[in-house]
Image (cartoon, rainbow, N blue to C red; front, side):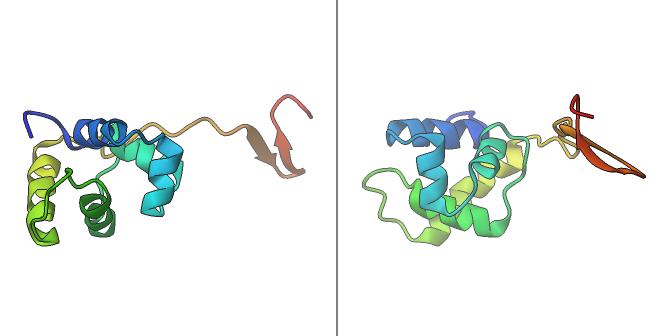
Length: 106
């Protein structure tokens, strides 16, 4: 591990494994959105995420115990700056006292 952020490491490992974002998310049991947020360092992984990631994305031939792989991930996580308030996507609907409507279809 060089000076990569957690997300950079995760994306590199996913690509080295030849996995699409969706395929990798399925292996982990996450949504594609969660994995995307993790890969772009917009979300700090919860312990449960880190545990699964340490197992699924282990380097080939790495037979160290999971706790040692988790330690390596924690080093990456600790040196990564996560945005505490990542931008939220603009909703494509609007709610009024008359109900909720898809924008532009009112």
